[in-house]
Length: 435
Image 1 (cartoon, rainbow, N blue to C red):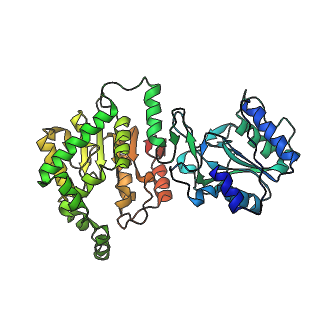
Image 2 (cartoon, rainbow, N blue to C red):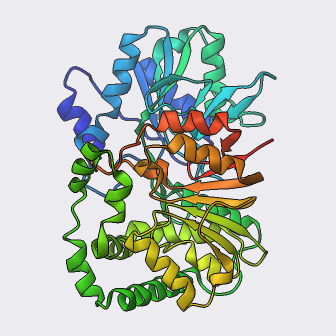
Image 3 (spheres, rainbow, N blue to C red):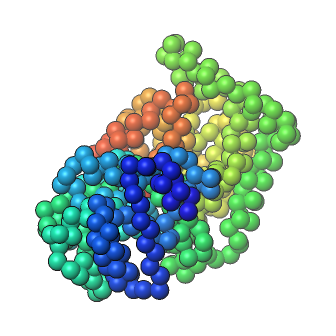
């Protein structure tokens, strides 16, 4: 209703008619709405399914989110051949893939990979029917029934296929992102879809064994916090005060001296205190649960954490029996803490401090964006990764372009480099090496 109010208030150049169809098969409901729109001589018809959420960030609704319809209409007005245009949302099951498809060389339809989503207007074979704008003149060229029972294809594939056959283009503005309500009343969003995909995978594999996930997370963080407090000789509250004195803008002087390694090595106790506080924030706790769900420590494993710092995530894998190489800048407080912690916890024999391999998995958490020589580092990682081994990273979840320490935020360049190394995305967070 907020969206409907916005359209009437902010888009006075358009008249709007609302059609709601309940308790019908999907194809019948869509056909009925098409007929209503034709009777009213509408120029456009906008489908918004009741499981699509515009203000998925739980706010009253940023103006730019409610402006999605005006943006879609402008695409139509700019290109008379554009017959269908949609917004990006994600599946709520399995791998939470983007609901947009391309044509394969065999004529079939295939989901787009994350690296193929350009965050802008792009022509596609199919865009999701849950949030879709259709040019009404399309139905002058398409024979009814416009939507049919979903014996072979879903209604979105059906209408997009018919639009292309009638000479129209189909596109999706992937800069517009809409939430997708799950059966358990959780909305799939760009921020949580990777965690949900991992949970779906565990569910289909038979569910979790052993301790409740939140207990494991709390145990990991508690042990990490206790060790940092002992190493610094400070309480958690005192660490918060120390962390507040961390000033990332000091890197600008290091850039002038061309000495980023010296900069990170000289951050002192503020660096470790900041990492402690940062990894106790709710977004990082959610990520911690996700990373831990991805690695099977019931089986032997050999991993690497590049740019590990205090290693709040991957040190847990060592405690569960995996071998792990930790790589960072010698002399930096957070890295020296990890070395001290390995000795304190009696796991030095499982820890390495330089490149090894061949690895089952390599973590790049909060690290790629800090690297000047990321091409060289990723090439080295690819060389030391087993075939079918994985690179796990939160780089593509990071949109903090204003942080002066984030000097390498060209995600397109990183994507192309990884693919050139034979490493392909299963999702934004998991990239797998293929021979």
